[in-house]
Image (cartoon, rainbow, N blue to C red; front, side, top):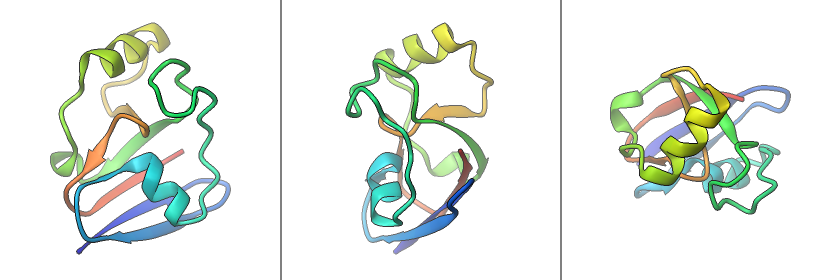
Length: 93
């Protein structure tokens, strides 16, 4: 079991028992994380900043990398729709 924590306008946390997408965990935690494209790595509205636990996150795929480059995102920023957690993680949105 691991915990994914969200810090923002509506903070929350989700307890997850397997690898979980950050976007799915935000819904489980009742955290209103934007995702205009429906989680398909097209818009960048689900951008989060990883505060802790980056080592527990999936590698960046081609679609996520393309959007992050277009957004000129910082290295510690990820798309919640494309990022899967395997352990305790804390993000800001």
